Amino acid sequence: MEKTQCTTIQLDRGIVSVYDFGGIKLHAYKTNDPIDDEVFVLVRDGRGAVIELPCFFDNIAELEGYLAARDITVEGILAPYHMAGGTFLKGTPVYETAESDKYGRNGGGAALISNFTAAFGNAFDPSLPETTIIEGDGLTVAGIEFGIVRNHEAYDITIPAINCVYTHMLGHDCHSIVAGAGHADAIIAQLEGYQKAGYDLVLTSHYIPEDLKDVQTKIDYLKRLKAIAATCSDVDAFKAAVKGEFAEYAGDNYLDMTAGFFFAE
Image (cartoon, rainbow, N blue to C red; front, side):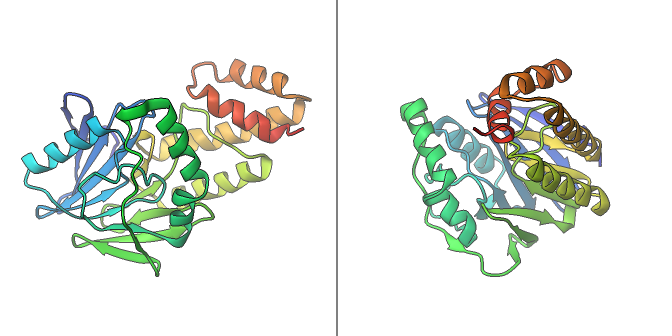
C-alpha cells in the first residue's frame, strides 16, 4: 500500500487519514498539537485498538468524539512512548512493558511530561493511566495481533495483519536525536530490517505514515550525518555543515541534541 492511498477527514483541530486494508482499517490521527503527536486506531468489525495516547485535552475530546460518532469501541490502548493523557478513554485497558513503564513514570518520558506540563499548562494532560504490563512478545487487542519488540526505553510494535510497524521516530525530512555514531549504526540496522521485512507503512509518534522510500531517505541521512561528523571538530561546525546539506529539514532542536552527543565535552 502507498502512503497516499487513504481517505482524509478534516476535524476541527486534527486530521484523520483512513487506510483500508480490507478486514482492518487504520485511522491515523494527526493531532496538530504543539509537539506534533500522532495516534493510531486499528479497527476490525467495530472493535478498536489504539497506539499511543493523545496528551492535549482538545485532542482527547476530539478523538473520543470521532470514535463515538463511528461506533468504534476501543478495547485496549498500547502506549509505548507517550504515557501522558491518562483521561483519554478512561477505564480502557492500557498496555505497557516493564521498560516503557519505567521510562514513562521515572525515566526520560517522565522528564518530558514535566517539561510539557510547565510549557503548556492547563492545555496538557499530565495524568498517567493505570496500566497492565505485557509479559510476552505478543498481544491481541480487538482481535488484532501485535508483536512487541522491546528496547531499552520502551517497545516498538509489529502489526502482521496489515504488514506495518510502529516505532517512535522516523521523519524522512526531519532531524532526529542521534546519540553518536554507534547509535546511528543501530538505527540504520533497524531501518534496514524494515526494508528486509518489506513493510507497507512505518507508523511513528510524530509523523504521518511513511513508506520504505522514506526509510531509505533516512538511512542516507544517517550515513551522511556520520560522514559529516568525521570531518568536523566542534558542535558549531557540525551543525553548520548539516544545515547546509539538509536546509529544508525540520527539527533544529533535535539537531542541537545530536550535535551535543557527537561532540560531548
